[in-house]
Image 1 (cartoon, helix red, strand yellow):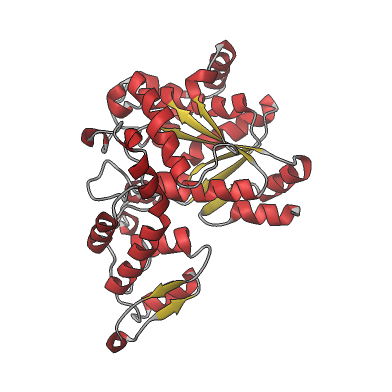
Image 2: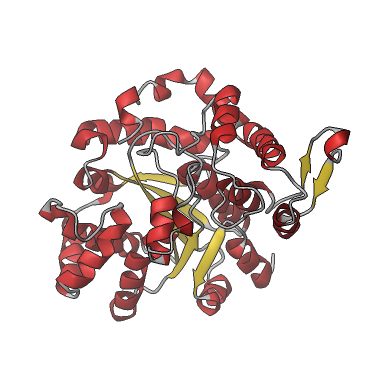
Length: 356
């Protein structure tokens, strides 16, 4: 596979930004199998954004010849008070349910390194964390804590100020060529890239699109900054009814999609349109099934055609919802079947953990 084809795979949706294209090209010219990393807080159930959207990109990286590391960030989760701040439970869920959620989505364990963060942390790592903190300002660190889903004005434990330095140190410790995350992690990646030149730890940052929650709406709020709109709108297990979990039943998926925000003729901030664009229209077309009296079945080739047809009012929201539900049911079938056979992992997550 030539370099440009590999670059195209990395930039394929749901990727939204590569910092920078030229740096990425040089990496593929100099490394046969570049090292990639993506880190996850270990919290409640895995949804479309955390699971399916992210793993689609990991598959692209594998196809491009990369060696991915899926980093299960137990200390980060502990600082951010996930799973009630119970560190032992965080670790158990990380090595159990969370790891197997990604395996259920088609990630071959023989081709990916699953790493529990604290298994690697040693004196040299903590020295690196302190070095990064020393080379950064308090103001910069406070700006970066939005990567935790927190706002600077929130009353938070003082430990959170270490979180961005720890995440940057993870990148340097793993010695990766590509650091990958959602767009909400951009601030800490930019901090790490600025320091990387001095530390001789250069890397490329790849950011994927953040899927909005089913409730939608926040991206249309003119009183919010674009960044805040994205953060408020993103799919979140902490907002009831916002998320589709990767092991939801067919009935649950249909019911959630049926209730989702999907305003007629509007594509901006429309979660149903975005799910189609970033999850399955990146690969293939989609079929809209509808009665002849409403125009009959419709074949849509790509996201651009979908948006045009929808904006012109030639596609009703309920018909679009039906098609997206069918696609998601099929895409998530492997996860449903996997957890049906391996219920011990799903049972690690209780009802109260869904929102934490």
